[in-house]
Amino acid sequence: MPNTVIVGSGSYIPENIIEGSHFKDSVFYDDNNVLIEKPTEEIINKFVDITEIQTRRYLNPEDFNSDLGLRASVEAIEDAGIDKEQIDYIIYATNFGEVDVNGIPNFMPSLSARLKGKLQIKRRDCVNYDMIFGCPGWVESLILADTLIKAHKAKTILVVGGETLSRVTDPFDRNKMIFADGAGAVVVQATEDTTVGLIADKTLCDNGEELCYLENAPSLNLDADQSKMYIRMRGRKIYEYALKNVPDAIKETIEKAHLDISDISKILIHQANAKMDYAMIGRLFKLYGQKDYDHDISPMTIQALGNSSVATVPTLFDLIRKGKIEGQAFTPGSHIIFTSVGAGMNINCAIYKFPEGKI
Image (cartoon, rainbow, N blue to C red; front, side):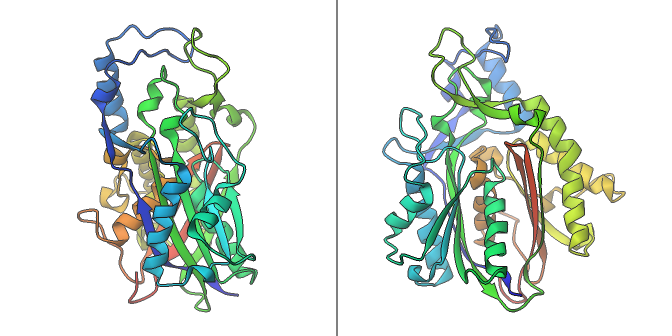
């Protein structure tokens, strides 16, 4: 049975840097639809203290999700050194599809179909799938790609994660300061070397009361248009859920791979909120009897790039792989973890081993 190795990667980070001052004239309401009386500057500063997000990136008005995915994909295909007509499947992770400038999601045609068209791939049997799985969508797409390869359905797959969350945020919600835009992509291929590549994975879906933790909902300002839907995040509920469930899921995946935490060189966790990410990784190490951990094992981009949902993990992977994050690098033969938690609520984790002599 073949394994799945990453042979190329790419990312696109929009050029528009949005600082905290961008929100200085905002008016915020709480989850009970009550106006928050605190000064906006105080709200912004507290937000930075909790999330560590200093800046985030927004796409240009003329761009769409598929444009961001196209740029990341072209880079990944060129990096892999393959002919795009080799691609058997395109899997595009998203939550809102092709959002227009008015914030209206569009899933017809699918993002993966749009991307195939923009890549000008002529193969009719290059199949396109959209993965709508919350923030864990790109990791789940990677797991699906591995499943297709192991089933001998494909040899080469393009796995993309792209989102334009700046277009689906409630102007009156403090959480709008978390969200950002971007895209990341990898090309994966089949290998007969079963000791490398994606060697273990786990996915968990809790879809009871957790369904409302992240959802679409009207504006928090009841005087605003209530027919328009925005991303709504119940931060405290998500924090408690993630801290309770994600570390255990990661540990179970490590054990599934017959490894120990000491065998893991990097943990690439979805960049949702720095405080939450630190807490999850810290609790993971406590499961192994360690009170503290070296923060270099879990590099962060959220401080500068914000939360771009499905794009955070592949973007982080690409930046490290290409030496674009100071002090961070992958080592041939090492094990890394891809992991995420998000809307659903869904959790996933995948362990990847680099081939010897190649990143």
